[in-house]
Image 1: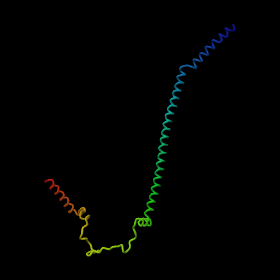
Image 2 (image 1 turned 135 degrees about the horizontal axis):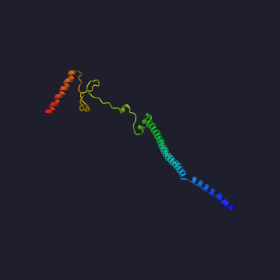
Image 3 (image 1 turned 60 degrees about the vertical axis):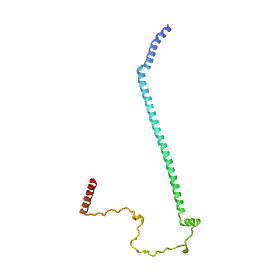
Image 4 (image 1 turned 90 degrees about the vertical axis):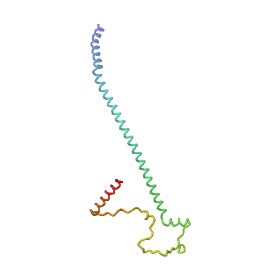
Length: 171
């Protein structure tokens, strides 16, 4: 009898444990939990994507800054080299060095015996105008016309221009 009582007493316990299992694994709980899990996974995925985008932008920014710093350093080096070259050129242009170089290649200071003077018979250093026209002056461009600031002068210029247009138009 004791065995039967235990079975009978166990029967309602079994039903209760089955109800608990069904309650634990019910669809509603799974649906609620699966939604929460899906939202959590989706949130993590979005955060990972945003984090990777942020890291890629930061990396690109860091690379660009590094390149800019390298270029600025290169520019500063070139400026320094340029200044050194300017200083070196200036040292070559000082008078004692130029004088020494001229002596090296065969030049010497001129003496009175080395200087020849040319005398022109009809030369007048105080003359106003030269009778000879230089080649550059012969072929110089014509000078601009004199501007007449009166209304009559302007009207005459307009009339002359108008008349020239008709002359070229008529043949």
